[in-house]
Length: 80
Image (tube, rainbow, N blue to C red; front, top):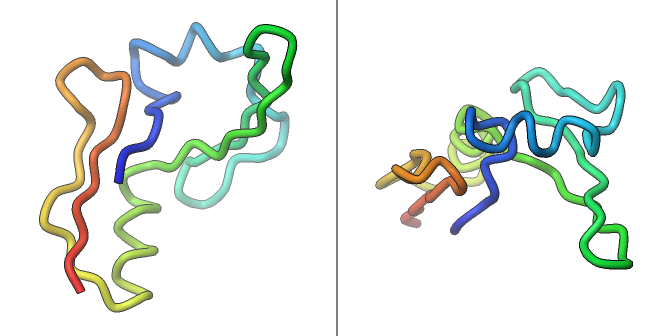
């Protein structure tokens, strides 16, 4: 699975104005409203710890869970 890494050092400033106030959860994940062309898009930005928590609580093992070298995305590989 891949997810945007909106909280990475590369993306944090770029999307700061799109972050929904008060949406941060206990995993330091947040929700965003991102405008792409003329459309508004909702996005939940997962943290690595939130993905780990979700995997463990649904019976998956994590084979890999990291931010890509480019810092644009997170890659998570699960195994059931």
